[in-house]
Image (tube, rainbow, N blue to C red):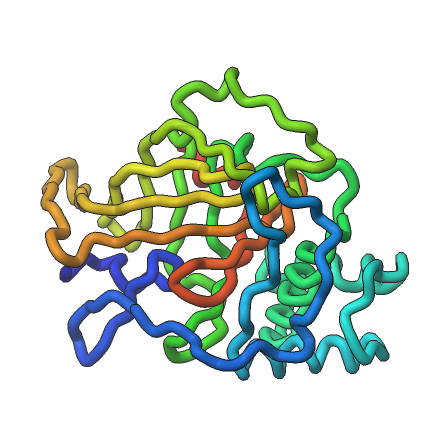
Length: 276
């Protein structure tokens, strides 16, 4: 697929020797001792207790570096207030693309993820990701080169139609924002992932659904290119993309999520540019 925006990391595509292919690399490392956390989140009647994902060796190094800088030897059940503010400050700097040490930024996000699975709330009364109209990926990690980077091409997840009947959804905010064991699924909606590169705007179109208040699944099967007032639409065929984003930290202006295709992502909530 020779789309000008097909190399965007968050969509799960990578460029290889001038062509575009889907990244299907999956980490097969053993679970790190850092990840052995007992979750306090109570599972649903049919759902298993949530467990942290396995971390790659690079992710383990990033997490260990942050733990060492915080003078921690393992994942605590709760972060002290000063360390919590320090962690959130680093992530907020990443949202502004002002965090220079990207390994530290990734490590802070990974620590937030581990605390999430331990049942710790870093953001009191956190909102649900289902209530956001658009998300803009700002920073991502994956198996490409460079592995850690700020997303260079403006990209927006248009979520306006991701919930066909938003009024039918009611969850307790205190538990829903961390309940990854929920088995309830929402009806399918539609998703438009918009990328902008010079005069070309690319729309990645497909279906989507919220598997739970923190798990967002989408299938991209069509691309539309808008150039100079004209539109060109085509299907992806065997290159269609399926992914699941699992949100583990949600604030009023940002969120962190893990991609099923690999790596983590820092997103801005309802950016001004994404509302047009």
